[in-house]
Image 1 (cartoon, rainbow, N blue to C red):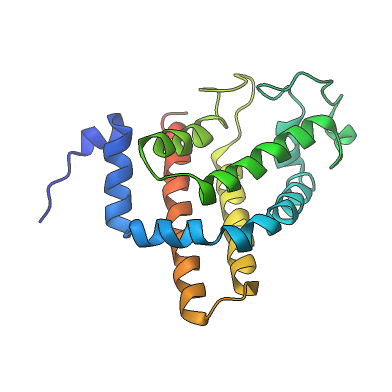
Image 2 (image 1 turned 90 degrees about the horizontal axis):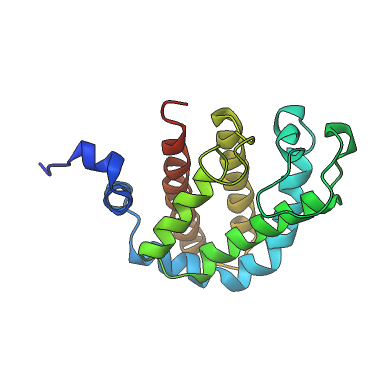
Length: 191
């Protein structure tokens, strides 16, 4: 039986990531499959981003988080939830972030810097980073992660891959998104 330092899981990000990756079975083959998906996923990212934001803006519980000034956005903020549209500059700013997130998943090395990036993605949705006035509730983060997972699974099912490669690719993304979900959820502890 392998011994795990459970306190270290809470204090050492790399240790936590390595534990999750080992436990879930996310390894070099999964990373390779994710990176090899770039020619298939890359062209579909804009559509996934548009669909995601259409869904986010169709519920008040998710849309309301786009009214306050987003960290790094310097333009005019929306007056209220009713004035949000898919084309508002602040929404375009957020869409660009999601687009870059997908590009990071398929284009970066899965090293210590990537682990820090994945962790920051989770932290950015809490007052711990970004705008301290923005705190996306955990239920909304989980809804977003589920939505992204489903969008990726649907997209992969449409790629011109043999069934075995499509299944391995879907499983690789699924494992990665569970790790991402944990690295988001950890910032909600005690909130």
